[in-house]
Length: 230
Image (cartoon, rainbow, N blue to C red; front, side, top):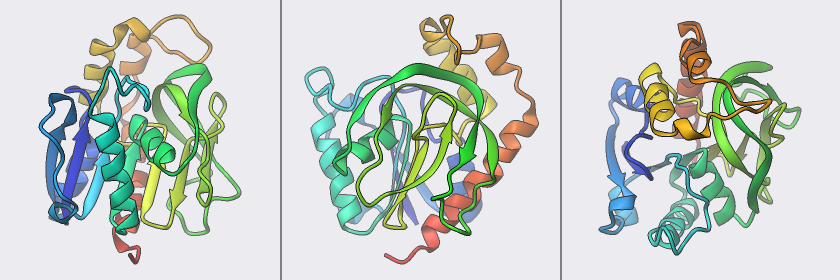
């Protein structure tokens, strides 16, 4: 499978998703959309991976590539491609599907559990509760036709599945120790006092077991997406 990974900043890449792709024999190409240069045709990829970033989904003037990226996401969904969005990527998918994206009541930065929703499909690879990594200030509303997957204490909408082949996560299941360190270094100014904001020291002190549990769940979900009929 040919995977196109859209990056909005240099320090937010595919993380553990790259490990999954390599293990499954998929080809992954990274495209730094913030550098300009346009987007490829739909025929050039089978799986669209949309990563995070600090911008808002509707900041078109500051980030003039956003409208074209939204158009590509919409076309990929309509074509039955596999589409997976993380944080900003999830918000972009939600926006393309007609849902609102707005500031969350509180920023959520740190290691906090998500809880599986009763609406999560039977057999979907998600335990009743999972400790995961978060870094976001905005949140999406649930798009019409999407299935709610999970919530957290600070954010009611953590994930959704749409048309079996489109998956969106507000949280960061793809996080590795290295990607977390890069995010904490580049966005240190966001680590202010707050009920759902941890210090850089706390972020980086998380046990390796937490990464391993996230990784196992992520890999199972990605395998599911690739098996879903188009």
